[in-house]
Image (cartoon, rainbow, N blue to C red; front, top):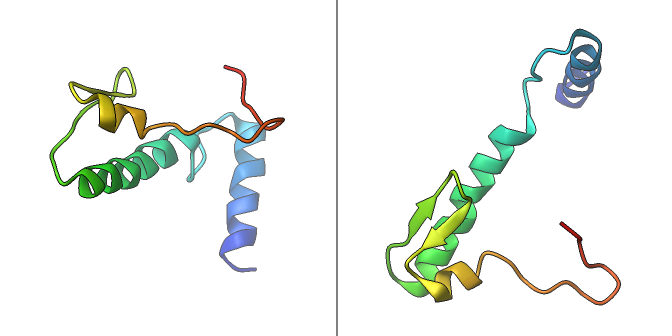
Length: 79
């Protein structure tokens, strides 16, 4: 048993039922964005303006530049 087994079982059950899992990707994106944005604001020692719809920072080119980093050659992600 344990939490990992419960998590995996929930995932497979949701594949069959087409229900939203207890741990969905969109909840995780919102949670981790909060952490990343807080870190950016702390590093710059200023407030930033986040547009959740566009998934970007407005009005601060330096902060916006911290949203992504260059990937190592051969490990780039194509969007």
